[in-house]
Length: 256
Image (tube, rainbow, N blue to C red; front, side):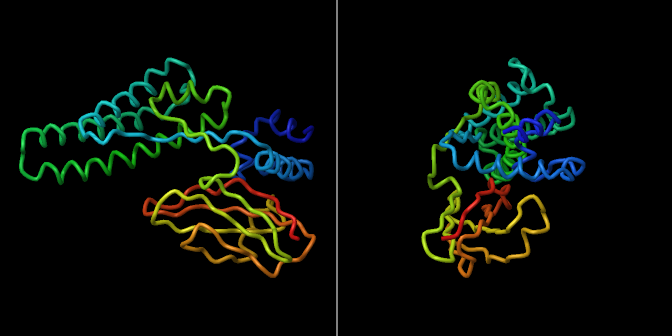
């Protein structure tokens, strides 16, 4: 805990630890490596709630327009003060333009304009691409302010999904057979691919690609031929038609 407290005192955030983006000047200290390993173990082994920011739009197209304006105004007005480093003006301008464009296409559908439905679908996809970027921005703020997560998502007019323990949406790993590790990845889509990585030292980014584990269509796999009694570190990420997610937190597993 002393090493972890030292990292936080140096301005390192939990998000930087999980993503492996701790400043290089700190990585020269062996205590930093110990702190990163300890932090990831604490996160995965402790029974804590894992809050995830999600977009929850109505099935009614007209309501989607108002929901998008609520999100935009909530972040722009920043009543709770958590969005002081909000997306820069160009980002907000582009977001507002995408919402206005989608609203215009919905108005055309209501007016029975030819090809309006097809145009609305195209503009909705473009708007959702922007919305996912904004969601990731809000997720980052929640990660750094877990105690205020409900207030943050309420201000952004999004929703909070709490993953308690090891469920189907949480990456888990265990060793129940000699020389092997069983991995269960997150399930986020009916059509997804799951990438897996394993290494002996997660503090060195170059180690992750040394031991190759093939990606799978199923959200589970087993790594065999490992050394019994040895500690390995594993992680995974989901790839959908929207692209790859971020890598999961690292899990430490001692092989049986």
